[in-house]
Amino acid sequence: MKSNIVKYIFIIFVIGIIIFAIYKINFQKEEVIQENSTNTIQETKQSESILNIGISDYDNINPLITNNQDIISLSTILYEPLLGITNDYEIELKLAQEYSKVDATTYLIKLKDNLKWEDGTNVTGNDVKFTIENLQKADSVYADNVKNIKSVEIIDGNTIRLELKKEEPFFEYNLIFPIISSKQFEEEDFTKSRLVPMATGMYKVSSATNESIELIQNNNWYNANNEDRIIDKVVINFFDTIGDAYNSLKIGNIDLVCTSLTNVEDYIGTIGFSNKEYKGRELDFLSLNCEDKILKNKEVRQAINYAIDKNKIVSKVFSNNYYVAAFPIDYGSYLYGKESKSSYNKEKAKEVLKDAGWEYRYGYWRKTENYTTQYLNLNLIVDNSNKTRVKVADLIDDQLSEIGINVSVYKVSNSAYKNYLKNKNYDMILTGVNNGYNPDLTYFLGKDNIANYDNEEIQNILNEVNNIADVNTLKEKYNRIIEIYEDEVPYVCLYRNKNKLIYNIRLTGDIEANNYTTYYNFANWYRQ
Image (cartoon, rainbow, N blue to C red; front, side, top):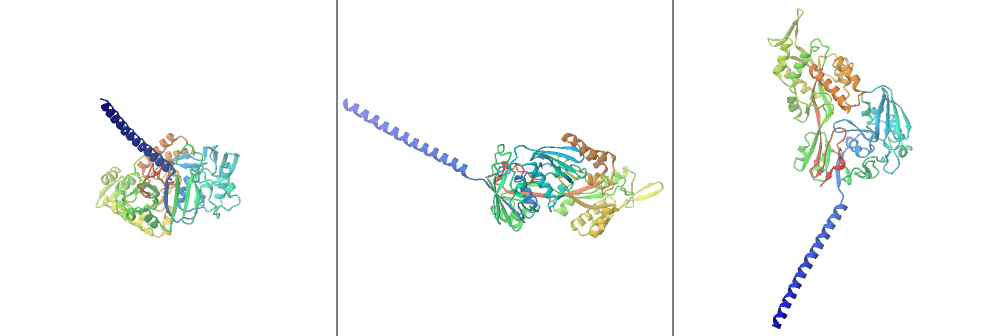
C-alpha cells in the first residue's frame, strides 16, 4: 500500500514538471512574439516613406524665376501663394485668411495670423510687397500676374491694399504666385541668386545637388498640426531628357512623371503603372464671323456646329489623344458643369437650314430674300505653317461638304493669317488659345471679340460676374451664358490637349491633378 502511494506521488510530480515545462515554453514563445512585434512596430516607425519624382530640363528651384512646369507645380507644396486654385479651378485661401474687392480697382488681403517661414520667423505683409515689386521688374512666368498692380500698401503687418491700374475681371486669380522672404533676398538680386528660397508650405528643401533635390516635412507650416503628412521625404531627380525619366520610371527608380506626351505608354508599357488624365489649356476652335452676310444668321452657325464631327477629328488627327471641346472653359472649371461632347448630327444640320428657309437644289443650299438669292458658300482661313490645323481644316471642309455647305479653304502664310485674325475679314477661321485659370469670357464674348459677336444680355452678365462672390449666383449667371452660347454658336469649340500624371501603382492616396498643380491632397499620398 505504501509503495502505491509513493508511486502515485511520483506520477503527480512528473506530470507537474511536464505542465510547468509546457507553460515555460509557451511563455517564452509569447515573449518572443511580443518582442518581434515590438521590433516590427519600431522598425516601421523608423523607416521613411520616400517618394521619387522625375523631371527634365531643370533650371532653378526658385518658383518665381523657373521656367520648368514641373517645378512650378511642385512649388505648391513648398512656397504657398496668397490664393490657390482647387482641382475644379475655384479660388481657395492659402496664406491669405481673407480677401475682398473694395471697388473696381482696390483689393484688400489679410494674411493668416500664424504664418511662419521654415526658420520660424514671421511671414508679413512686407514679404508680399517685396515679392510683387520684384516680380514687376523680373522676367518671370508670373510677370503678367502683377503688371496691372499700380501700388502695394501695407495697412498693418498682416493686411495689404492693392491698387490696380484698371479693373480686371477675376483679378484674384492673379494672386497665385508664390511669396518669397524679403529678409532672405533683401541683399540679393533674386533673378540671379542661387539661394534656395525659404518655404512656407508643407515641405522644405533639405539638400540640393546637380543631380537631385531632397524635400522634407516643414514643421513650421501653418497647417502642420492638422495634416498628418505620410510622405517623409521627396526626392526630385533630374534627367537630361524626358525619355530618360520614362526609362527610370519603367525600371522602378522613380515613382512619378508628369507629361503632355499622349502616347507615353508606348515607352513604358502599362503593367505596373497608373495614370491621371486631365484636360489641358490649349483650345482650338472655329471663329464664325457673326457680321458676315451669311453667318449673321444663327441657323447657319447652328448647322455648321451640327455638321462637324469632332470625335472623327480627334480620332483621325490626334489618335484619340485629345479631348472633344464644347465651350471655352470646359477644361474642368466648376462653372461649366456639363460633359464636353460632340453635337454632331448631319440630319439636324439639314433640318435647321430648311426651317430657316434654305433650299437644297442641284448640290447647293440657296435662299432668296428680297429678290436676291444667296448661296451657302463660305471661306475658311488656316495658317499653312500649322500642319495639324491644316489637316483639321481639310476634314472640316469634307464634313461640311457632306451636307452641301460649300467651303473654300485658304491655307495662308503666318503673317497673312495674323492679318485676317486682327482685321476679322474672314467667314471662318481656325484658331486657338491657351486658356488662363480664371473663367473670364471677355476674349470670346466681350466687346470687340474676334467673332464680331454681340449679345446685350451676355454683355450685361459679363459686367456683373466680376463683382459676384457667391458661388451659386455665379453658377446661375454662367449657366445662362452657356445657354445663350449654345443657341447662338458664335464659335465651334473643337478639341483641347490632354496631359497625364504617370505613376507607379505602389503610389496610393487621393491623387488628383490639373494644370495648376499635380499635387492635390499630397498629405495623404502613400508609397507602399
